[in-house]
Length: 79
Image (cartoon, rainbow, N blue to C red; front, top):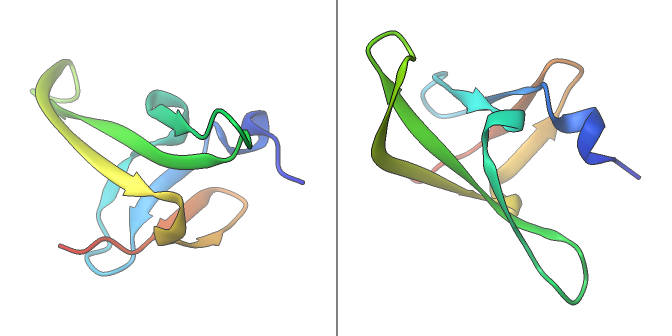
């Protein structure tokens, strides 16, 4: 079983583009209240060297995760 603490510092990397999407600990989680399972991550978009958050967000569904490694989480987006 994985704990959120074990995942929180991992980088989210898009498999199709190789781009860094963010760090899991800096995201919002959507959780199923009945089961406690994670449904998705909402990743804020930053600009100006990561200092200012924009109003744009990316949503990554749990089923888009392809691999969880020691330092990163590989996801496949539909972009």
